[in-house]
Image (cartoon, rainbow, N blue to C red; front, side, top):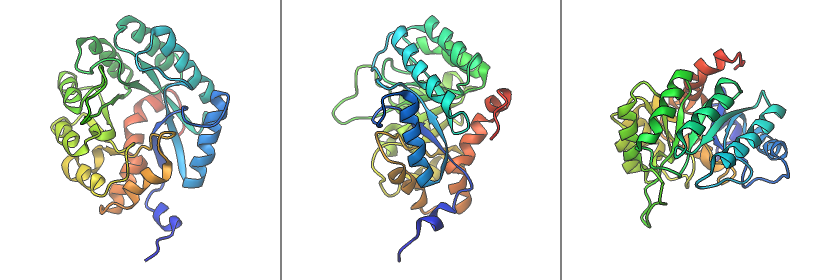
Length: 273
C-alpha cells in the first residue's frame, strides 16, 4: 500500500534535526551552504537544524583551525537565527583553548552545544574540564562514536569509551553520535547511563535500528539526526517514519526530546521555540 509523505509527516508536530554539517553542500559561503540546507529542510518539513564544523573540517584541528570552523558556523547562524542552532567544535588535546572557545561560542555567543569528533578518545582525562564547563552552561556534549571492522581512526571514540566518560560525569548530558556505528553494540554500551542519548543519524536506514533504540533505552533517550550533507534528510527520516513504534514515540524522537535537552540553554538565551 502506498503511503503519502504528508501522512507520514503528520507523525511529528515539529522536526528538529540534531546532526547537520556545512560540508558536502553547495555554496561558496557558510550562509550560502546553510541556505541550501534550509531549502532541503523545507521540502521535508524539518523546522530547525543543529549545525557544527565548518566548510572545511579537520580531523585533528589546531586551536586556530577549530576557531575558524566555529566562525563559519557563527556567520551562517547570523543569517538564519530562527532556523538553525550551533554546536561549538572542539579538540580536547587543547584543554585551555577549548574552555576559551566554549566560553566564546556558548557563554558569550549563540551556540547551544558541544561537538567532539575524532581528535581524541573521549575517555581521556583531557575532556574532564570541558565536560564540566558544558554542564555548568547546561549544554549537551555530542560525541562522535564508531566501531569499525577495519579499525577506527587513531583518536576515534567508541560507544564504550563514551559510556566510561558518562559514568565519570553523571550530571552532564551526552549524545552518542551514530549510536556507535555498530548500533546493536553501541546501544547496549550506553544503555546503563541515563545521561546518554542515542543519535540515529548517519549510515543506511536499516530496519530495526530505531525499534531497538526504543526498546533498549526508551523513546525519551532517542534523537533523530540526518548527518546531512553526508546523508539525506529523507533517508534518515525514514528510520523514524518506517519504525514500528508508537506515534507519541515518533514525536519525541523527531523533535520533542531534543527540545527538552536544549530547553535550559534556549530559555537562558531568550530563544523562542
